[in-house]
Image 1 (spheres, one colour):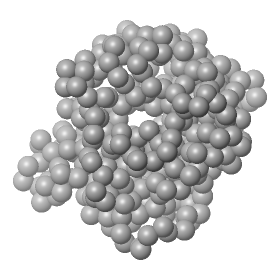
Image 2: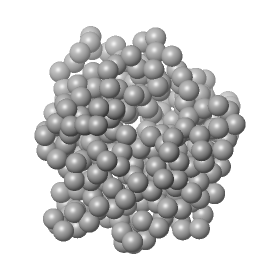
Image 3: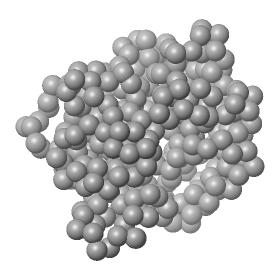
Image 4: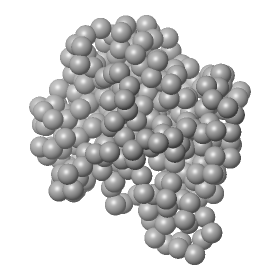
Length: 315
């Protein structure tokens, strides 16, 4: 999936240029599950003699990342989800899952697709939820579905938000231990008040456990944490709502000029962990797997080893 848009001008740096956020002493992974199937792992297994192998392995492939479910595949998704959640439970780890099949996904952009209509989507989410099992699980519900909803008419946006609220309830009903996070865009997009109003309309307060920010984007962790707290404050209770932040590619902060598609000079961000030490910030996650293209260095969603290598190097 491509970066959330529109990307704003670069945020002011919060540390010396060239000093990425990655490797700053966070405990990698904490309780998070490393799924054994991904494009980067496929590449690592097939390219042991590549000079980039060691760096990509240690800095990307060995870090837990989200597992995306981007195909509208009734009848198949339950088993696919169950294969991840059951393995995670056996390992005593928490998987991060991303359902990504909302109709009109990506407003017709590079990651367009999804279910044919909201009724079909509701059924697909029920199938998705049936695979959650009974263990802890983090669900990043439909990136861009709220922040990028301005392309819809008011009626279609209202219908989408109602479907997202139903999705949250369905996921919790299937597994009360699931933590469901709703789309809050990122710190350079909508104001906290506007985003909170949309989240409220989508049922984030009653159907979710919090919000997620920065998916597939590059804004610094400190900026995202401050923004998430502003959104949560504007959203209002319940008091237990928290936030998760995608830190997979934000080590050097956002690029200049509003670039969003595989920009050069980016770096890995903080290691994925559920131990952030930050008030109301539940986890730093790698939602967008580093090295998977936004659609410029390769087809959207495909793994590009040179891009991964540059992110791991921080240049």
